[in-house]
Length: 181
View 1 (tube, rainbow, N blue to C red):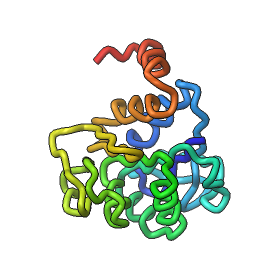
View 2: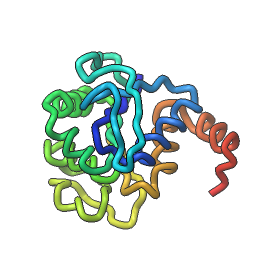
View 3: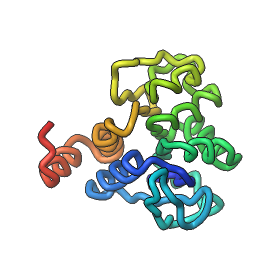
């Protein structure tokens, strides 16, 4: 199961593109409401979530995804259950994925120490202990995948699909959506 944490003020592209790619690839994805059952994006797009943060079953989790956007990332950070899930994912060897400003969450928790990571340029100082790769769109180091920004959402989604379902699933989805970059 892939859990995508949805908080008020998420960035649309960074959430919806990876969700779409994963689901097209046959991966079960559950949208988790952190700030309610219906969550609004930075630009007024509303998403109905599948479950609340209190209904997450951590041991069933394959991957935890943190979309970026503000104030979405702040709303994720301010929730103790989110911080606990992020720590659980990393410590239990589950996959953790964060895009744009969201990598600051594992960064603030000290979970990026000694790892290669990327994030939105203005957030780099919050990736404590990480080796920040400024000219990279997506990087995976161990069980953590980080991405730079909304422009990297497709590459991010394909990387997550590869991590869960393999290269063949990625190629199938790319062909289905005419992705030829």
